[in-house]
Image (cartoon, rainbow, N blue to C red; front, top):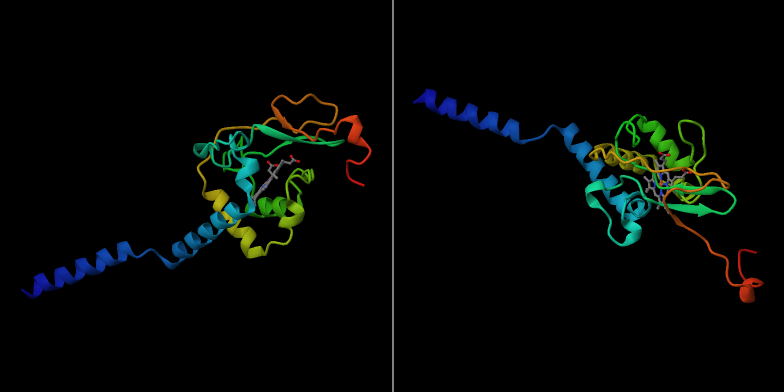
Length: 179
Ligand code: HEC
């Protein structure tokens, strides 16, 4: 009898240990959830998920890189790259620090500074905690094998769709454009 009670008590404790995740795992989950929330708010999906600009974001390739590039007059054409941990097509080889630096300062590990259509000037104001939550979420994504084309210089021919600033017709040209 005592034996059975003891065995039952032991099994209950063992089951409880299995069910309750360690506090480290809970903290990491909370961080990833926070990152997901911030990525949703910051609109990363718009420029970094295929299909988004056609009104049909391909959620199976969430943040897997856009087929639509932005033309910045005088700078070139830039596609929102693959942000998933794919080692070749995405940013799987970048460290947490390298990703955080790119998001908040625009500087890639190879030293190139990202075109300002990537809103890193705004993301420079994120707290360290929030940037690390975003990076933790990106690192938790399934890797997507999709490499975006480019970047293309101002004199290069883009190979995919382009979002472009088109000058107004001559009649209204005089009043248009940034002053
Ligand atoms: C308005 C469009 C836009 C939004 C919104 C946007 N990005 Fe980007 N992002 C880009 C473009 C375009 C590039 C590539 C620029 C270049 O190559 O110079 C880029 C580049 C990057 C890079 C560098 C990747 C690489 O391989 O070079 C990272 C990391 C990144 N974005 C993360 C994010 C995150 C995280 C968010 C949301 C918090 C975000 N971006 C929101 C357009 C955007």
